[in-house]
Image 1 (cartoon, rainbow, N blue to C red):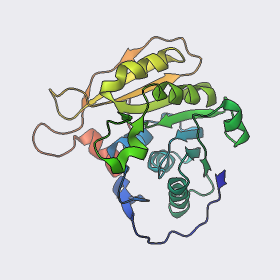
Image 2: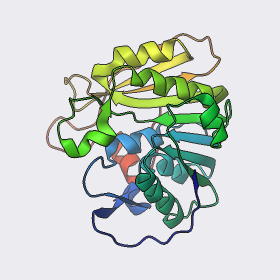
Image 3: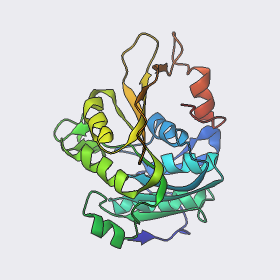
Length: 258
């Protein structure tokens, strides 16, 4: 089901309106449950394609896709989420941030059959960039019940997310996921069987810390070998300040260079 843009955003109970990219974006999102944060911004800022069409799988309120659109004026986007209420927020965010001519939202269980996805309007082999921020926790392990819907994931579901991304990426297209470092082995196995030119970027809180997040990018149809980049620390050694590279990304002044 496609959601038409143009609905007026209204203040409603349980929804907050939060500024991203130094105020360039205002995102309506649930006050409780999964809320977009640094991971969503980094995912959107990691998109390397300056033009073409972007697919955001499990887009939530749309933060990652909107970050990419804000940075790249020639990019268009399709946002997909299985939750109709969250998808409605994404459609509102597209409209309120001025992207109604460049983006659309589909309500769809994208882990279903390829035939059902195509019938719903999600074309195969069509997207120049595909991004995703899959749930972090296996079923029964999320830290709080209110986060369960957005953060529970069966053990084999990650491979289905990557398989769907591969099915809809165009030849030569990039597929980018951000995920917890503890699931790297499963993530890498799913990517390695489908993509080449895989690039891994471990993210660490501070120098000397173990990685807590990883960005991974693969190119559909490439045979180039894997590249493991040096870990990058988000914060300065002392305190909560971000390093200049990431402060510029979160202010909306730069993108992620990797």
